[in-house]
Structures are given as structure tokens and as C-alpha cells.
Image 1: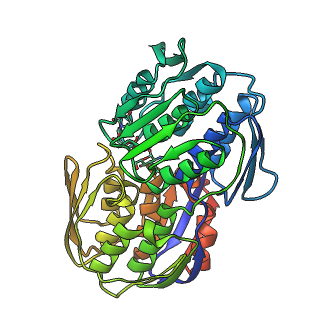
Image 2: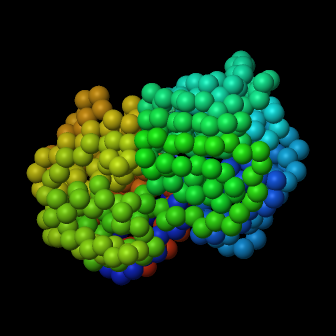
Image 3: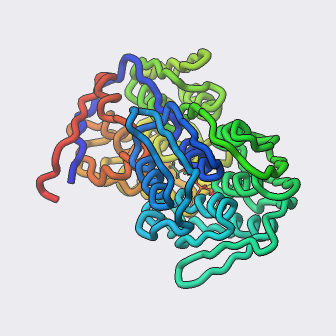
Length: 422
Ligand code: EPZ
């Protein structure tokens, strides 16, 4: 097993380039299942989750060529199976989105129920309710879901009880090949939804309204492959913005869309950091003493839940008391205990955490409990006194391309070593 060693106290300086968005590329690669000709994707991030979804598709007979770095060619012309293997699907929740495209292409799909994870139960009721509204027959049993469409997939109007990102993406894909018109109301508005819609439309789909609460889709009979460049990862970008602010550094973040960072930019400015926006770059200068701010996570365009842990790492060293409220997931405070072990002063009650700052963090051995909690531990290590050791790095590798190299390039004292005692 490997671990990270971080010696804290060094302000970050220099430039860092953001990679393609994990949460855009995963549904987009899956959507390539809908086409009978190949698609080519550029700016594909080198992440474990991309490798995982590629393996799922290969098991279905899809050809996936990743021989050129940051590029992926996906050829779904010949799908030979309609059931991805349990061990691959259970390893990564996003694989569940394969159900809709497989059903649309093969008329039947069988997939294991996605389990919960560290941050919550992660139910799929919104996905299934929308599928049934489009004429899909869902059978559940023995940990599996079997989806068929005995009378075809027919457009319908569906109201989402919650603007679920995955459910919005899943139903957009299915409705693209339905008969007739689909109207989806109260859907997710994240930039990754817009990216998927743009790719679907390049494939010949007719998706309108992505990025607003109402999406309208005219079903078509067939989709073709397309060339597509993935948007920058707004969560990776935000992680480096926070790193610059909390280390009192001066960092230029390249390949980022400022309009995707508005909630974080506003909060960093409120905390006293300088944030300058350019067309596709953001310059962040941290002040010596950041001020406490309150955070409440919400579906886009609210403050992103995927930035909550990283922001909390900054707030524990800010001057004053902060409150963090997590409204999207029911158990996304797994990083709190790890931060407390480093000296943070945090108390939680339900979905709220109260933070008393500034705390003087001291390095110790901590674990990553999930992807963004892992990022929060790295951020805490960058400002802690002494050395921080971080284990369970597989969580980090799922969502951050070359994070050690990128932070080293900014002057951090960080290295990845074999962990001989585990
Ligand atoms: C996507 O997960 C992201 N993952 C998550 O990022 C992100 O945190 C989340 O959206 C919210 O923005 C990918 O895009 C691969 P949801 P998803 O469906 O689609 C409830 C990361 O760190 N819900 O919007 O699974 C659910 O329980 C990851 O990169 C239902 O109740 O999120 C949760 O409380 C973590 N029923 C809330 O909605 C459903 O049928 C948000 O879930 C579906 C969801």
C-alpha cells in the first residue's frame, strides 16, 4: 500500500493546469454506448474511475482505445452483452448509468443494484421512477435490476423529486432514443449535465434546456459517434483554489471556466482571499489570515457538495467560527474526525458542523474515507506543523490526476512512498 508524506507550512506559488472533468467524462463515455459508430474524446483525465468505466464497457463488447494519452476512442458498434459484471459495477457507482443506454440499444439490460458508499445510501428511486414513466419495466431481485421495454421506450413528462445529477444524466440518455417527446422537470443543472447534452446533440440527439430546471428531448431513431472535448474539472480547480488561499500562496489555475466556480469564488473573497478571473484562468492570492465564513451545500448553482470537505479544511485554520451545512448527502462528514485528529476544533450535529478557528494543525497519520475527504486531508497537511501521512490513496486516484506532481510543481513538500507497515 502507498501513502503520502506532506511537510506543511509552504505557501504554494506558480501555475497548475486543470484536467478534464471526472463527473463529465464518466456519463459521456457511457453515452457513447448509444451510438453505432465510434466517438473520440479529448482532454480525458487520467483517473482510476475512467479506467474502471472503460473496463465495464469492454465487458459489453465495446472497443475502448486509450493508447493516446488524454484521448479515448469508444466504439459501441457491436455490443455483445447486456449485463456488466457485478465486481466492476459494484466498484464504481457511476457504472449504474450503463443500464439506460444498454436498454435503449439491446431492448434489455441487467445490472447489480449500486450499493451505498461512505457519504450516503445513494438510492436510485428517482432513476427508476423516471424509467417507468418512459415505459420501462423494472424487475428487482437478488441484488439485481432487470430492465425491459415490452412496448418500446416512449417519451413522457417526468417531475424529479430531487434534482439528482445521475438521474438527470441517465434519463437524458434513455429519452434521446425514445419515441416522441420527453419533458424533465426539476432536474439537475450542473455544468456536467450541459456537457453531456452537448455531446448527445453532436451525436444527433435533440436535447434542449440543459443547465436549466427543465430539459426537453425529442427522441430520434439512431445516434452516431462524435468527437468531443471534455470540460475542465471544476472540483479539481476548486481544490487548487482553496490550496492557494489557505497556504497564503499565489497560484494561477489554468484551464478552468470561472463561471463554473462562482459559489467558491464568492466564498474565498468573503474569507479575504484575492480571486481574479480571466477567460480560462483564475488567479488566487491567499491572505495571511483568512476569515471564517458559513457554507451551505446545495445543488448547482449553489455551493457544491463536492467542495464541502475541502472548504472545511480551510475553515479550520480561518479566524473565527464557521458553520458548514451539508444538504445534499446525509453522511458527508467522514473527514471531520480525521481533521480533529490533526487538531481541528469541530463539533457536528446532524448535517451541520460548527468550526472554531483558527486551529493549529499538527501532522499525523490520517486516512482518506472518500474521494473529497482525501483531498481535504491533503489540504490540511499543506498547512499542518510537521509531517502528515495519508493512507488509502485509492480514493484520491479516482478523482485527481497527478496530484503529487501538480502540488510539487507549486512548491509543496509532498511525496508518495510505499507504506511498509500496512
Ligand atoms: C454525482 O453523484 C457526482 N458523481 C457526485 O460526485 C456528486 O457529489 C453528486 O452528483 C451531487 O452533485 C458523478 O457525477 C459521478 P445525485 P450522483 O444523484 O449522481 C439523492 C465526487 O466526489 N438521490 O445528485 O450519485 C442521493 O441520495 C462525487 O466526484 C435519491 O434520493 O448524485 C443524494 O442524497 C461524489 N434518489 C442526492 O440525491 C435517486 O434516485 C444527490 O445525489 C438519486 C439520488
